[in-house]
Image (cartoon, rainbow, N blue to C red; front, side, top):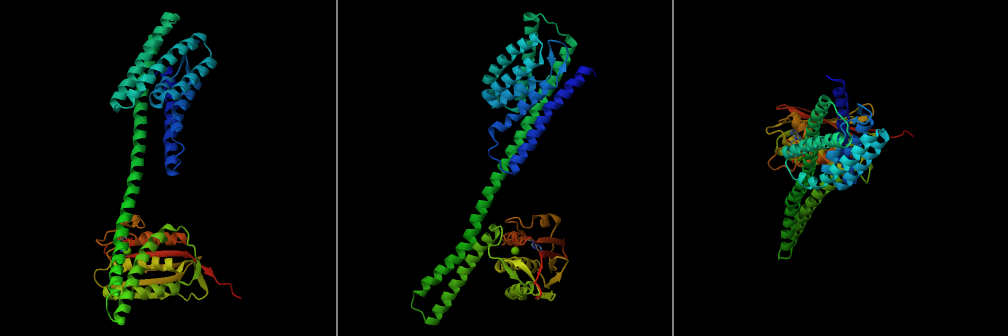
Length: 423
Ligand code: ADP
Ligand code: MG
């Protein structure tokens, strides 16, 4: 390979480097939602490429400075609009002036503004066409640039350029512009898809939210309304008391669903208390007993003596969290089985292990736990785990799930433990 070709390839790498930065910074912008980084941000790529290309050129002779500056220049003009075009012309001519070689500078003074202005007209059309046509336009422009430069240098400035060098230079530029156009299009397409995905996901969350609210909140409200209406009818005081209590229960249920959402939405619990794990578990077990009996599930509890220890959190939320996990465990067993809750004291945490003998989960399902609306049940809401995970997270705890399909699942909750100071 000719020495010059090698140098031009290095020059080409310099063009790819800003593209790589562009891709990375786009990701950063995406992850941190930096919306302010929009328009001007894309112009970093051509400007940086152009400057680097010209600062590390392949110098051939006094009047000629060879590099691949035409690639970022053309692309900047085509994609970036006239303002970027003007900036690029000024930067090119400025750097070209500093690099020296009078004739070469004059040639640039003619070619760059000329091509720059024509790019302004082509770019409107260029942005609307398919990738293959864009490549065609790019290659044609390179071709045109070469003929123009050749013509001006030989006719106006009486310079001769070696034909073999010229061929290499031309070939690398054509390959270069094709690769860069494809890369640029792929990067842009990637981010468009990414942005569409996020939008679609948001819409999905909203529609799910609407669906669950209408399902889980409207139903209890409708029932409540019915019973309140019946209160006004001529019925015995006892019946009235019964109706009122049903209406209240239903209202509580609606409140609970809303609380589930709010539990999830609240990043840190507002009313933190000192909780004793054994008390909280007793509470949850009592309220879930009817379901366990109905599904013929044995509940086995073993808790160490935790009189002198406490965890920090909000009782209602923590109970909700345990309740959701235990309920899933019970529901996972279609025939009778055993669900054990085992609490023990580890180094600086308290560990609650909730083990069932149910259907178990695949690795993929475990990975999706805590994701809103993830459910494999016909009548599931997919909110339970989302709430449990967010509660444990807000208590600065962790959840480990191990599961064997057909055998059972174990949820291990680790929560920071505190000891009462002995007086
Ligand atoms: P839901 O119970 O309404 O489906 P959850 O958020 O409580 O929603 O649970 C999400 C999913 O996680 C369940 O549909 C189930 O597939 C899976 N899952 C959770 N806990 C268990 C378990 N103990 N055994 C088997 N699968 C479970
Ligand atoms: Mg559930």
